[in-house]
Picture 1 (cartoon, rainbow, N blue to C red):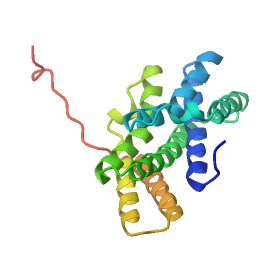
Picture 2: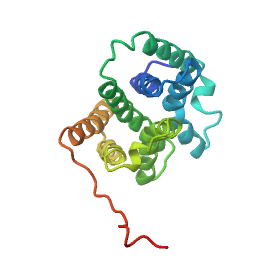
Picture 3: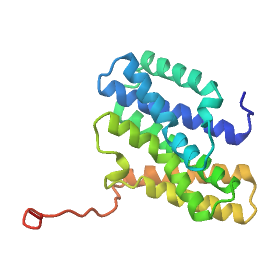
Picture 4: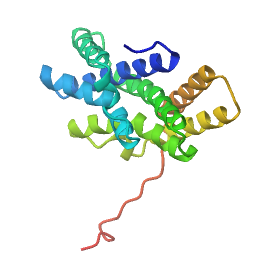
Length: 211
């Protein structure tokens, strides 16, 4: 069983958000029931799995807590049943992806701090936890992952992770740190998409392409 601390509640919330995000992406690609569940599953646990492997936390979290399997299964069924209510598919996908991004950034940074890692490594771990589930989802759905496009995605995680480390070093209440960090990531993501802010992209013109 999972202790219902705010940290674990946020972790479950991130799992739900990313599972819905994965299920919506799979349905948008017209996959069958099994395909929808697989995409929802890897989106929900992909970032955390990579994180746990990197820090040597094995078996990884979802293997030790069967509740994650049940939760993702229920969320997948919920997404399928109420798919007609999610008529604005792209907006819904973006919303749940953003929520998962913000929440999972917290869990990654927190675990890095708990393991005594360098603050920079902890921030990086938070970004990886927040983004890798979406990367796996996009690759399996045959799309260029959001993290590799012009959109500010991983950068929002890094800024949120920095806020976490700073507040933690100042001795702020842990629950306050969780809330501020998640809201920082979510707010940045919403604003940059709303106002079309993006990182510069670079490419080789036809004349510059090496032969």
